[in-house]
Image: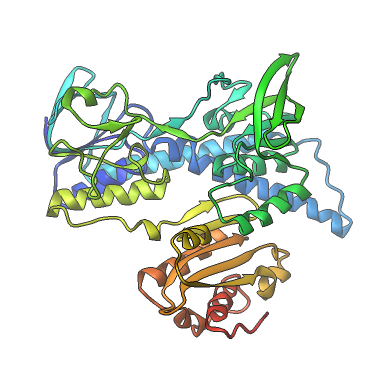
Length: 459
């Protein structure tokens, strides 16, 4: 079978690329060896957010005690919550199948391998295309000391497929995955320990904003050990005994926990598809591309977690769109990395984009910043969601918006107002003067913009 475009992988990058290619008039097929939707829909973003929603609801139930209502938790069954998360994943995976079919994309099930630069073999059948987009995604990184068994030593996949809440867990790594599962498991009653080799949790995020999340975790009795190195562990009975060395003072602490979650990042899925056979260049497993997502081999593109860009579903989707536009119209479209939103779905949430304060300092950029606390927006007080802050950076002379970070309730939603303003090249005064409905959380953004202009009202 001959195509204009073949996409290998039907995750958020691959299926979006396939749909856009077909919409642009190109005969398209997508190849997927597992479930449509990839990691994100099946064992990542979607089921984890379903669990986070239930964790938040479960936490809110506890507030009924303030009204003198006693809650009986004896019938609590985590497996029912897990089933909800799986139904969400299955529904959306079926939705992807519908969208691909509706857009006349051929769906090929199986494992693709290159036989030459224009041909892939799947289940013994050969398919050719003028252009091939590789979107094979990533998998959890395993570390030498801990090998996944997905029963007791878990990856993000294993913890998502867990039908029973453990009494205790050690989470190794405090990035987005580690902190989100810390939030989920703690909400349902698991004793959570986080170990982080760096000197603070979420080391790539804004330090002041992370302090707010750290304090929230501390209040919830989530124990965080930073500058921490695991030296050894052993299992006795159903529990692990893990020795953790503080790299600053060399002290050793032993933690006992039922399970261990390894949240040490992800690695690209580029083995086994015969890239070396056709000469596609890689570096440490990642496929090398130019800014148009072209590899060194004509007609072959790569997007998503297998290239050196942020490993985020929305980045993969956008890269898929851009790659297809470049196939159709020639190399014109690129991605502005400064407009990529980052979203961490803890409680409170953290969302950001653009330049961080650390980057601004390192680049000796002359900037101004505005901090506005959540409690200055009336709705956050009324809804008991006043824990948080909006921070925005702008050029001192031009007032160009350079970046922002929000920590607090609904941060992952309201960050987009600031990103849109930056993309549209609006100035802080444009948002500062715009009427925001009262009471809303987004008033905190308005006030932060006013702060950049020197006239914040509610602080």
